[in-house]
Each structure stands twice: as structure tokens, then as C-alpha cells.
Length: 560
Image (cartoon, rainbow, N blue to C red; front, side, top):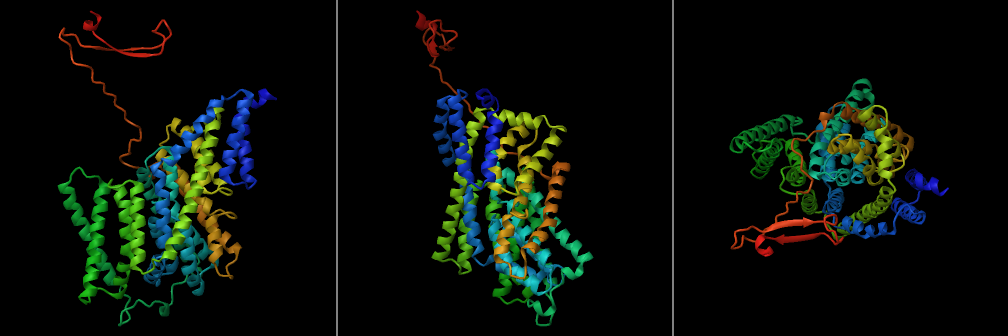
């Protein structure tokens, strides 16, 4: 029996962990208890040495000293403040009016605002609850299909998991040992592509089932000119001026800074165009020039603050001005400023946001400590080699590995959330992917898109629970579940597209995360005899007396 346990300690340990998790035991304590139990068992069986456990304090202090993880409370606090600052309400109302005349206009507005909230808050709960409270009653009032309405809101809220500044990508970069900034850059295009696929689904529904996504009636569109016109022409003209200013600045900046990266030029030129549009709208309002319509002014004053916050956070990270942690700190400060501008900032709001941020941060740290205890013992019993052998022996090579890993994450996402998946499975499959020659940034984005489905899976998807808590009574749980199914399939298609077309996730210049250590030893100057002292290393094999390794300076002058 002892020999069987020693030979199969790794699979038994992993199977016991799965049983713990499926039993509903808290994940952090399940990980830690499993690691400690099998660690003590290994010591008792003579498989492990007692000194192994002395590494635990250093591992825990390493977690506490990890600067990257500081970005999690910063971005969480930013999202919670923005949720209560009135920004979501203004965005949904304005963009809903903008797209209102089009079939499915409110659904398009929800998807657009969901992507914008994802780029500013990075918190799924904040996005889903805000849009569920504001948009779902409007969509139901004007005859939208209940399944489609609930599915669009839940799916748009989960965009916060893949569009930077996503908490998933922060954890993924930390676990895979890659730069958070590189992970953000690589995930940007897949996030926008997924947003476009959601909008494409709504477009398809509007073509084949037009009664399911009606346009807003004329009486519901209140952002009109006195003569009854919508004011869209004025908005299009303003956008044209902003785009022209951006291209002009890009040409100037590119000529004066020929070595500047393309994303840096794009960010700076985009900022110039946005600032120009805001200044023009501000002058139009202050001086009463009458150049812009009510619609154009409203769109500018509602869209510019979140876009400015996006530049403050993501723009500074992408151009290298700030680290993700520093960007999160600036984002939290910017969220406070926006809440103050909307006159929503209060001590009660601050207390709620800080309380929720502390809870989530403690949740993450406890899971990370538990996974560290589990990982230490699991590697000591050669669990990493067992997982590597298991995955590298799959048929199909790299493709077979990717298919099996994605199916594993997709299946476990029914029962575990993304933090648990990231802290338990990613450290096991990441080294195997690296040995197979898979780019870990690409791999992290792929798993991030896959884990996004953990919020949408019926019956345990958290986004569905968030929406259920704020949905009207006429929207049943069945409607919410069936409404989520098409968007889960879209996410699966997105995972397949990333595997088939890997260039969808690409980054030009990656940050080298390997530590470069250069050792310089200044030897004493040559003595009067003209001989340079020699630096000699001797180890135990060279020392006949069996003494400790020695570092000696010697010269011919010393020998004399």
C-alpha cells in the first residue's frame, strides 16, 4: 500500500483536490489543506524531507511582495466607484438615443456601452448590474425578445474579462510570468473582435426576426432638434473633424519621431482628436455658436470622460509611461474625479467601494496562498512531471494539447470561477505549453477568452446570477439561461478562431521578463612586480581536504 501511494502520489493528490472542490468546500482552504495533508503524508512515507515545509514562509512573503497584484485592488476600486458615479446611466441613455432609430438599436447600445465599461471598470458585476437595471426595462417596454435582451446584457458585461484592464489578464500574466502590459496589448484586438461578433449576432436577428428587436418609437427619442431632425449630420461632421485632426497629428508626430512605435503614434493621435472634439463642443456650448446639435453635444460630453479615463489607464500603459499597477492607481484617482464631477462622491460610496475592494483582494490573496501551498507539495511529488507527461503524450501534438486544455477549462468553468481556474490549472498547464513552444502571451489570451465563458455558463454563470438579481419578474430564469446560450457559442467560436488564426493575438515587441544579472569584480591593481593578481575559484572537488569552496586572490608577488 505504501509503495502504491508513493508511486501515485501526484494523481491521488490531484483527484482529492477535485473532490474537495466539487464538495463545495472553500477553494482557498481546500488547496491549502490538500497541500499540507499530502505534504505531511509524504514526509511520513519518506518521500519528502521535513525541510520542504520551510519554503512556505518565503513563498507567502513573495506573494505579499508582488507589485503586480496591487493592480487588482486599484482596478476593482475604480470599477466600483464608476458603477455608482452615474456614468453607466448617462452612456446607456445617450447611446440608446443615438442608435434608437435602428432595429436592435438598444441592443447595439448595450454592447457598445458594455465594451466601454469593460475598458474603464474591468469588473463584470458592475457592468451587468448597471445595464440590467437601466436597459432591460427599456428593452422589455418596447417589445424586445426577453431571451435576447437578457443574453445581450449578460454577454456584454462579460467583455470586462477580456478587454483591458481585465483582472483575468493581470492574474494570467502573473501566473505565466509574463508582462501585464504585453498581455493587455495582445488581448485588445480579440476583445474588439468579440464585441463585433456580438453586434453581428444582433444584426442577424434583426434581419431574420425583426419583431424581436424593434426600433425605438419616435416619442421615445427625446434628443431632437426644435425642427424635429435627429442631429446626426452634425455628429458625423464633428467625428470627421476629429479624425482629420488625428491623422494630421499622426503624420506630424511620425515625421518628427521616426522611431516611435505604431501603437504609441495611434494613442497620441487619438488623444488629440478626442481633445479637439471636446474643446470644440465646449466652445460651442459656452459661446452659443450653434454649430453642433443637441445629439452631438450630448454624445461628446458623455463619451469624453470615460475615453479620457481609458487613455489615462491603458494609454499610459501601452506607451510605457506607467506600469499596470501605476495605471490602476491613476484610474482609481480618475474614477474619484468623475464621481466628484457628477456630484455622486460621498463617504457612504467610498465606504462601500473600499469594503468590496478589500473583500475581493482578500479573496484573491487567500486563494493565491492556498495554491502556493498546494503547488509546493505537488511539484515536490513530481506532479508537474506527471501533468507534463499526461499532456505531451496526447495525440495531435500541439493542436491536441490546445484542444484538450480548452475543453478542460470549458468544462470546469461550469463549477469554478476564473480566479480558481487561473490559480489552480494555469500553473500546471503553463510550463507544458512553454515546452511545446507555444507563446505564453498568446496562450494566456486564449485561456482568458475561454474562461470568459465561466460567467455565462448555465446554470452556474455569475453574470446570469447578477442579472437575475435585478431582472423584472416577467423575465424568468429560463429566459436568462436560454438567452445566454448563443453568446456562449460565439465565445467558443472565438476560441476556435484564435487557434486557427493565431495572428489574431499578436504583439510586435514583447517585454523580456528574464532577469539580466551582470557580475563585475574589480581586482586590485598590478603590484610593483608587474604581475596582475589572479582570481581563482576552488571547489570541494579541487580541495583534497574536503573544505568549503574558497575564493582566493593570488599573485606572484604574494608567492614570493
